[in-house]
Amino acid sequence: MGVYQKILGKDFEKVGAALQQFHNEPERVSGRLTVTHSELLVPRFFVWLMRLPKAGENLETTLAVEEMPDSEKWVRHIGAVKLVTKQYSREGRLVESAGPINFVFNLSEEGGAMVFHHYRSELFGVPMPKHIAPIIDARVDPDVDGWLVCVNIQCPRYGTICKYEGRIDTT
Image (cartoon, rainbow, N blue to C red; front, side, top):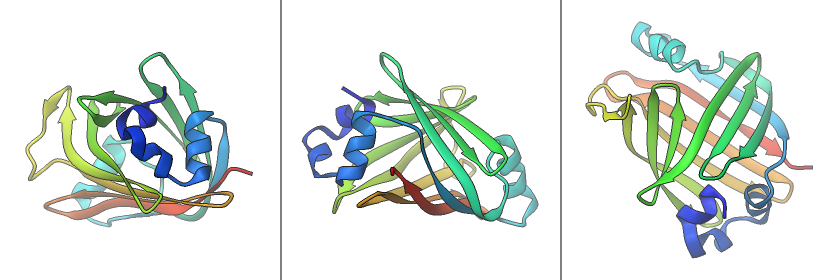
């Protein structure tokens, strides 16, 4: 059983068919995303620290998932940037590790979509203070041949750090 099926349980059956298929049998998919950044100095530092994709429109994007015994390795290429994370379940929540930073989410199904509600951010496993911690909220809405994705990375003090959105195709 995959990470997402484990977390969502019976609600996984309500997720759109394209997303179910991808999470049941991960394969390499591609699409196009538009990435925007804040122009403020501190958010730009977070973009660098988190090795986030460079800003741009209609960037070629690929995603490959490698299943491991208790986790998944996600390799995204967004434009020229390679973003590698590890995803796993902890206490019923989704954890996505990007180097020393963990993002912990409450994952839910809403109208066939997967919705990632930020629970907390951790640095080296220690919860970060909420007033400075990066917050990620995301939504993945399925359609017939793929899904629409919107990821918004914010910092309470500075607003949006980085946002990427677009379409991923499974055909």
